[in-house]
Image (tube, rainbow, N blue to C red):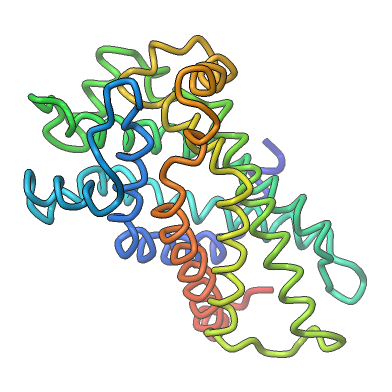
Length: 296
């Protein structure tokens, strides 16, 4: 509680993160949609999609281009506060852990990222992702039952209770914690390498974007198995799994180890763009706000 109260005393960081998160998700959502569909497309059914292109083709043929944006509202409503919490917590923790020269080493960056990831998972990501996955999964049924974001949330809570929006919490915490730990570790390492002995050296936005893309790629290869398990735990057939571990064991038993990397290519594309865009926008918004609202 102390940590959260202190973090929310950094309103400018929440604003910067929120703006960055909102713009990013509007750009990259179609790749998130395809990734989720491929992860939900279980082998035993048999598979509905032959690959990324086939998934896009079937979606557009059946629902038009707008079909690729099904579930956007749940992510958009969540992405703004998610990014706000992420950067607010990270800035709070990093300000506490910097050395006397104001430098944050990569190891401390990893722990700050871990803290930010766990905070966003519990407060924002788990309910947001659960609703998003249910929306996307619902579209594959013959008679979709969710008419929109608020109707879908009401139905989920009516049928499953509030806990219905917190399915897969353990997997989400593991995924988001490792996600942000890896990303901020890589980002901090690359920034420190680029700046060398001059901590005040400016970084070109394109370089920031490149570093962000590398950090995003590292997180994808590092934790896609957790993302697959999380997606299954939050789908409409989550009742088949007793726990996160049970879900992982059933995937391994019935689909083999390759199933843990379903959706890697579309996720790689989305996450690299995601992290690059978010860090560029975040840094630029901070520069603008520093003119009218001094930040550290």
